Image (cartoon, rainbow, N blue to C red; front, top):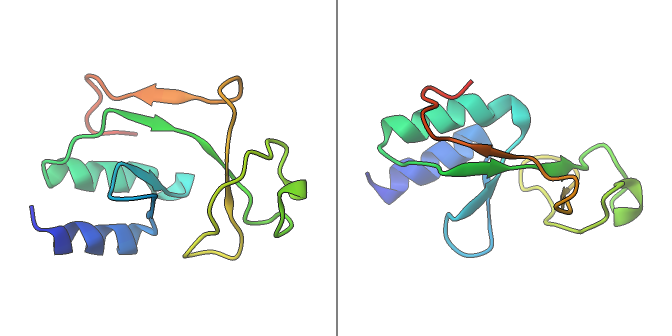
Length: 101
């Protein structure tokens, strides 16, 4: 796997790395399945997905999001994403699930 290939896939999928490196990436739900399957083809394994609130259609501040945990502005859309507290969080385990649907 070449870093440029991964960066190209991130750009095409509108997947936004959070923080340093590629540990966490935020991506809209519509793009998840194809993104995960392409990563699998690149021999990059994902252990889990966690869910963030898509606040793209909300106000530019945290008042428009019911979770209000904060998060980054989107590089690809007008708006931002908000981290969800654990009591709202859903985490999908990827064991024995290929391809992802």
